[in-house]
Length: 143
Image (tube, rainbow, N blue to C red; front, side):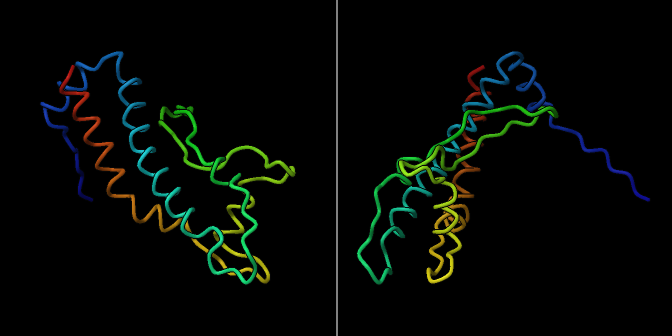
């Protein structure tokens, strides 16, 4: 069996070493920048599907759009950084915004699906990765 030992470029190792105790701060900045791009894509797609293609006038209250947001950056037990774009909190009637978003995305009996999350993910993926990379590069060069 072949063995492969990847080696990081010396320049990258030097930049990461210089970051030192700023690593958490830099990772947070990069993830927040990427999440901002993703959130804008989701918001745009959501606005485009709400109230469209319905037989009756829209009953949208705007609560789902207001509930869209980004979670704080968290670090799990393995040291992986995590940030989420999604829907928070209950609605005024007590139902879940995440449930309403799920119904909109996948439909239900008598209501066709109106996907907005998956297309936003597909559309913004490259831009999100680019923004994260640029932010990391900029921050590492500033150190």
